[in-house]
Image 1 (cartoon, rainbow, N blue to C red):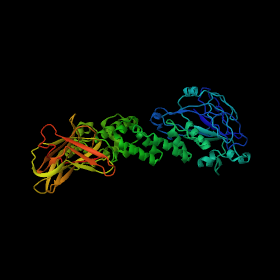
Image 2 (image 1 turned 180 degrees about the vertical axis):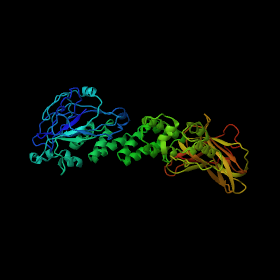
Image 3 (image 1 turned 60 degrees about the vertical axis):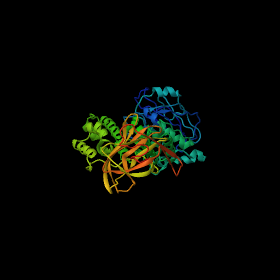
Image 4 (image 1 turned 90 degrees about the vertical axis):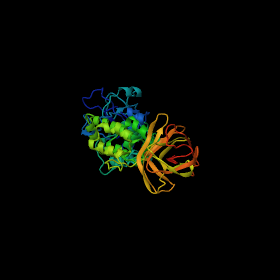
Length: 559
């Protein structure tokens, strides 16, 4: 399909498609944007006008994300029947062939404040002043998918200013865009009767013209990305800002990855930052979105390297595997473990396998075939041996939390001699609001400075599922203070749900707490928000720990 803009010496007006010699009438029509402006040398004609529609397909459902916008492949060559013309058509990405809509036509009046999209299946001369109207809905259904181009036809101009009596008539494309000004009026302006506008889609170009001529912002989910690209290409920053603001208002977890890709492509750092913040807060939902597997490798790595993702590492690995399968298909490779590792490249090293539990690692990554045997053995040793050997993967915890760390203490007095024989100390608890537990405070030895080995866990009571755990150790100084033992990553605790805090210590007798409280409330000094913990006895063998006395005196958390 050819989409053309005609600029004539008499006036800038809309006319049927210029058909090359030998072209059939079934060929899709051009988009004729009726404008009157400084390029004509005679008074403009008057006519009604109408607006076109555009549909960019499935990506529009996710706020008009148009992958491949601007990735056109120009092809140069003359048009038949066009005289001394030169034309370059833009060929959008084969992944997303455009579908163009065309509406009714007419000539414009005044200083090109009215614009018209014309659809015609018959050929006509470029000086025609009127065109047949075609029902917009019929035009949409009749147009085939094909590469699009936007061409500006004009005849050589001379002293066009002398023919315009008002400022309004002299204001047109050139005054709104430095690029158009150089194209039409600069020292190297072309005298060709056909001026190419490569890589531009008709609907986006029409939105640009409406903004330049009337300050009208016509942005929708299907056209926002192509309009942003066109505004950047022709240096119209005000329209760029409107497009970016539209995207910000429509940013959601299910389109954050697609918008992040486009923000990076179009060099929009503020929009990219907002996308990353959204992914941090809604990591699981963003990873589950359909568009996630369509991102490029650099965008994937930009997300995986963040310390602020709010999801368990095993789920990040699963998402990376899904992406690798899609990428292998795009590269026409079989989705074998070797090819998945190949397409992931350096992204694989950004998965923090040491943050997984040994059960998560054994059930997933260890059996995926993506890791080498040496890497699998090294990670199993990391999970089971103390001191832990060095591994090639990052073991720094991710923390999705913001704000100030909080803690509560459930005992009001400390006593001596609490023994350990391999049985876990456990206490059941619930809270009144959503929090993230990052660790426990534990009592240490009564015999002076000592090292302990410890396993800490948080278990969902009803399902008996381990939500977070860490095999680690801590050193104490012999005092009655508590000593911090942290989880590998924050554990989400939901309101009014029962959980079990569990600690299995290996070491000498320690201090313990007594005069325990069933309810403990923490009040934020900044906001006054109250977080209320309720402690209960956990059924089973708890090494003696209860609401009244025992271990696990402190819970460390973020709200």
